[in-house]
Image (cartoon, rainbow, N blue to C red; front, side, top):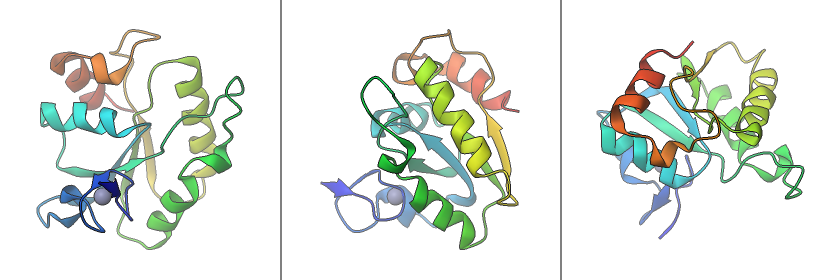
Length: 143
Ligand SMILES: [Zn+2]
């Protein structure tokens, strides 16, 4: 397994199964921190969109800065065109929120709609542990 060259999901080939699936909506990118968050969305069958895995979150405590994440690659995907909406699906934690705020500013001039999950998830909770109905409510209520 290796990171997908487009979205950084785990992949057996250059592109992961999701990026290679022509039925997926490449115009909707759900941005998550880790592959396990992507798995939570996939397990719930919540979106036909595609993903972008940041491979972490901004964390002063752990010395993780935006440049350590896959944000450059996300901006490149958007610049390539065809993207309508980016859903920021970072965890509802201080670090997840900080990461989402950074992305909102970084993508402000990108011309795509940037939304965030609704506050359906418990503060401090983790997407990977959210049940399907909570995750669905947060995704459907994104704004
Ligand atoms: Zn992929």
